[in-house]
Image 1: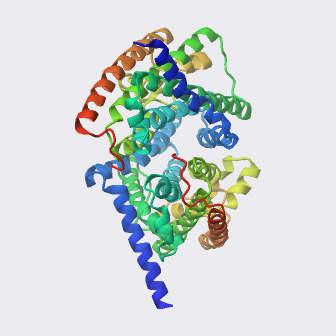
Image 2: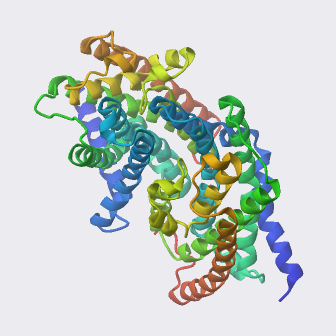
Image 3: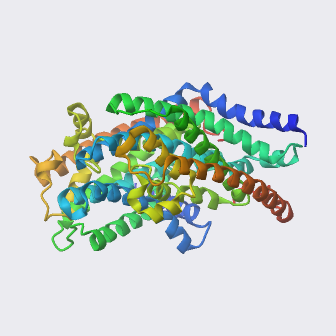
Length: 269
Length: 288
């Protein structure tokens, strides 16, 4: 394997996402301000219900993490579908690097760009709604956050492979995986509230465990976590490896099927 | 005059049919139905869960629960239709590359977009009805069809949907001039309405300046009217911030603010259309 070539491919695919996204200032405006509107609405909803203040913090962290989930759905999972529609997919297929490096580049660029949105959402949310957080274990918090992202984007790589042959169904599938996942992964409330075993099932989506662990680390004893933080971190590590390996095999299989059935260049399905 | 009217109605009818085909013909009807309903219904479930987590049971505060549930159900029209209508321009221009052909056809492009909105409305209406039926049957939402003020409901629904449609058309006009930004703008406008219009909480929860913004938007009055019409057994006046106004006053506010938005929307659409032609953006291909 030509490692240098693949690293260049990773960099080349990450570049337009990480840098291109910063070149249009108005996008930054939308990326930072828009998520706050929805988050503010949920905060006011909790206030109308008379919820404890810690729920405001839950909503802000959960709302910020929606940026990553949306990025995984729309800029990872459906990406090969978009590339097919715009005629880029066949170029990827003809190029000599591993397709996994294209996916890795997409993930890396997506993480960087989305982090701008997520971090600014958290900072603005904390300032506007005066949320108190207690970061007593910053190292562990960073480890949980980074592992969550790797696992999440690993899942995105797997989705991307599986979606490769789809037509408009890909669009609808991603649409379908927004609100239901917000619900079962506990984006706006502690996931344990939906029931222990149900929440455990939802842990297949890495953000479920990541979000729960981060809330435990940020809001302390007030958060009734699903599992101990270290257990959640270990599970996240396992799922990160599992998703990336699965993405590798799925990509090979789907590419083979696509070439065999002539579906890699089909547009407007 | 009659010919022009007939042509305009034909434009609306066929663009609605086209929209329906584009939305639905990629799969079988049952799967399409599932896809169309799951997203908004789960959005409602999130709010129901939040309510139950904090208050323990929907029966703890049935007035607030009905307020939230009915408001959220009708907001689906705002989110789905407004976003969908504005996306028509981007979809036709960038994806199917048919915008030029439609634009130069001897029809009103404004009405073409309105027709496309109707198909989205039909799909959304189904999700709204299913959400409300589920709410009544499983969650004791106090919708009472026997007591419903149908005339008020019908007039209010029509004006509200027309208003949503025209705002969507204005956003479609803005999309003429933008590439990727359109989804951000649509999401932003829908988000502003969600925040300021008392969709899931009374506007009295908001600071005074935010309440004033809400009172200038027709969606606020529309949702209030929908609640009053469908749930007459509950008194929302104490919490809604609009309790001092009668149903007719609310209808009047809705009509006046909708007319203001209609004039504004037509102005935005026409100006954006003019600019797009002037700058040669009608056939823009941003590969996004």
